Length: 219
Length: 353
Image (cartoon, rainbow over all chains, first blue to last red; front, top):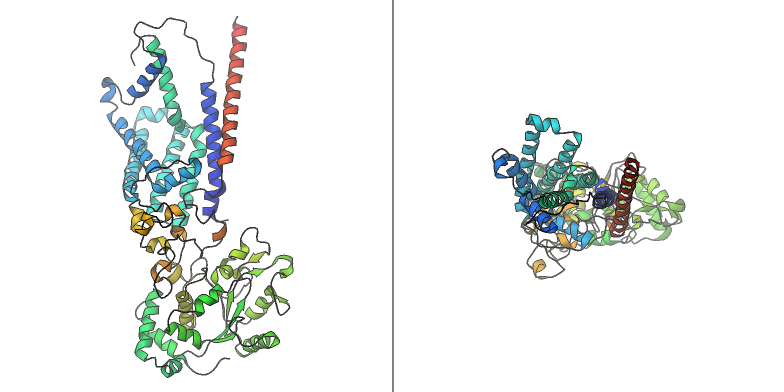
């Protein structure tokens, strides 16, 4: 079995299975946890809980005015690589075909060259995020190996995808195989590291919004 | 049998001028990515070449390779070079049959010891002692071992001989193996394809006749000149791939406008061959131009690599059922973890009270 066959076959299947088991395990585990009951009555004018949750999910998409200046670079940089990753993952035709093969869903793709350009910007942004993490004394202190693994496993598919597209460094099939293997590694790691925030952020923000709103705090 | 006549003499007799031979040598040199200065030496070498003894062994194959190589579209110098070789044994083309044919093979081997070329077409069955393909009461393994023993080089023509091909496809009931698995101590060159490009065969022969050596090969023993680039690299539909324009079904509007066939399972990006640049039938067309994606026929195990019509970026295994089971398992694990947490909380509350 050649490397590409291994990557497209058992490696990808393994990654997908671990991703689904792990993600649902964590999600169901969190959502079914016993909740602290708030026995106090809601403050006057407090919006209904779902609305409060939604408002906080959206409100926290951008920092408060007081913190805007201090967090301007990480905020903008985070937007750049998050949107970049979304465009690359959901915009490139081969990626859409991969998703279609699993879910049956499809949508029009973006021009490959455009996605390539977005990929380059995303990669630069990811390196900027790493440089900030390493250069900021507090952030460095807060970081642990898991954060660097998350960064590495997010960056590797971008790097290998760009190399495969531009045929740099090795034969295309080898680069494609490495790209798929890097995605499999990302899928395996996803539920168990901080990358799970891609799913959990909605629930954590929503829960915070509901609790604070109940107490009359505008978040 | 091998004669003393030189190729130059034969070409002159057939009205081919030295200028035409030089032009052909220049064409072949450029095709094989050799420096322009080599063309002269190649023409000289070709002109002085003696008739080359060739023994062609056909094993587990469909004769498509022979059809491809012998039915050239129009009379060409390549055809004349094929005429010039002394094809001393070939099941489809030889006049002799039975014991006479086997005797011709042995005679050629004796008379041209260490000089003759062995061309093999088809894979070799090895299961159950190799009984699944016999010639004159002997297994293919026996015939191959005997024939290559004193050969100058071995050329495996077609994907079956080069990589096992269709006979080797899962579950490979005959235990088919490629020639490289059985031949050791001899130079082996693979010219894969189902069928292979005639130019690749002609180029290899021309190189051997001119210089007495085999051309530069890649890691899979293929002539780098013909198998150095992917179909995708040279495909005229490539620009549509870059623009993200893909045909959605065979012969739809997009396909007719030349849009990329990637979504229809084209394996061009991982297939090394010269179909897109040299094309077929006198450079008229090639499969992608006819609206069908490349099936990757010049690559090992092309039949077992996840379906001919499955896009390259999709996984090869059907994991939907597996993912369903994984989802149920994940939710069950999560529910179990939450239940344990609830149980712990209840017992903690009871202790506190």
